[in-house]
Structure formats: C-alpha cells, structure tokens
Amino acid sequence: MLKILLSCVCMSALIPSASAEVKLAPHKITYDLKLKEASEKQGITQATGRMVFEYTGSACEGYTTQSRIVLKLNSRDGEGMTQDQRTTSFESSDDLQFRFVNNSIVNNVPKSNVAGEGKIGPEGAVVKLQKPQVEILKFDKDVKFPNGFLRDLVEQAKKGQTFITHSVYDGGDGGKILYNTSATIRPVKAVEGTEQVKSKLGTMAKWRVKVSYFDTTKKGDPLPDYSFAAVLYENGVTDDIVIDYGEMAFVGKTTSFELLPQTPCQ
Image (cartoon, rainbow, N blue to C red; front, side):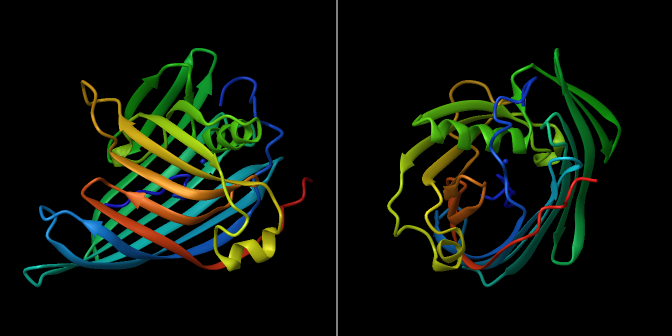
C-alpha cells in the first residue's frame, strides 16, 4: 500500500524548532500516478492512480494535512485491485504536537483504521495510539514529526547541505514504526518541474531531493522500505514526484496546483 510522505509528497522538531524561519505554504496539489516499473515477483502489468494533497492552517493555530491516494492495479493473471488510502493529520506550529487518522480501503472494503496523537518533549517523543487499540509508544529525543522534518530539509538545503539524516514518525504502517531517513539534496535546473507549479512559484528556490525511509524494527543493514523523490520548493511544495518501493515504483506528474490563503491569526 502506498504511503503519504512529506507527505508527499511524496512526496514533512526539537525544542526549540531550529527551522522556525522556514514557512510552509498552504496549498492543494494533485498528481496523476503511473507505474514506472515493477518486478516479476509483483506480477503487476498496469497501475494508474491519483494523489491529492491539501495543506491548510496558520502559524498561530497549526496546520492540517488531508491526503488521498487511489490506485488501480492489474496483474498478469487478469485480476484487478483498487487501493484507497486516506490520511488526515494536524501538527502544531512549533512542530511538537501531532494528531493523525489513517484509513485504508481495498476494493471498497475497509481494511484498517489507525488513529493517534504524539508529543515531543525534552525526553523524546510519546505517541498514544487510539485505534485500532490503545497503546503508548516512546521514542528518543531526536525524533521529528513530518512538518519538523520537512522544515529542516528545506533549511539544510538553503544552507547548501547535500545529505542529512533524521528519525521520523508519521503514523504510517499501523502507527507503530519509527523510520530512520536519509536525504540527498542537489541543485536543480530552472526548467525542471511541471508548468503547473513553475508558473505560480516563479524563481523561488528549489532542489531535487530523495528521501529514503528505513524501518527501525528491522535488524542489520536493510534496504529502505521506500523512497520519495521530488523537486522541493523552499515553501514545502513538492513537484515531479517518484515513489519507489523497491519492487514497484510510481511517477507522479502534477495536474493541478493552487496556493491557498494563509489563515490569519486572531
């Protein structure tokens, strides 16, 4: 099942937030997804879909993310499957509080419903899962939630860094997994990206990034569970995306994009 990264976009704090000066822009963006490649083991011959991502809120009240991915898969034996992943999350403006609800539907049948909330404090992150059952998870002090991670990725790119690592909790995969991430950052040509985004963001700074996600519950030196690559703008917008699960990869082309008004502080 596909996952949202950054929150894809993809495809996303410590005390205090080191990247508070990075301002993420409220926006709505839609990507058409197509199969890039699939291994023989997967048996997938065709896959198409769509991802819609909406980010709203303000620096005073925090930010809400709503996303949905719908994929239609066809296998070589003629079987078809429709996967529908819906996520709603809220993060405080200081990147220290996080609430999420993830719903997975396959062929119109609900498969999972995961909900929880987390908080980062001086001793680390504490997450309380509420669904499917109540459970308390504790992680070390270097954990970031998605917005905190995304802000720092932009901040380090602006400083000229080419490689960063972080531990990230996003509530995915049943809500129990902490990911170690590694991100590569490189300069990007002005012509890269889609016209839908370039026409509205103009000459804003941007980079080509690739973030790999490693499941911390797996021992040894595993391959990443998945990676998310995109053109990343300094306001957090991601364009021209690639989601790679190792044995299956998808490309996402932006078909619509709009900047949304920032909710004024009261």
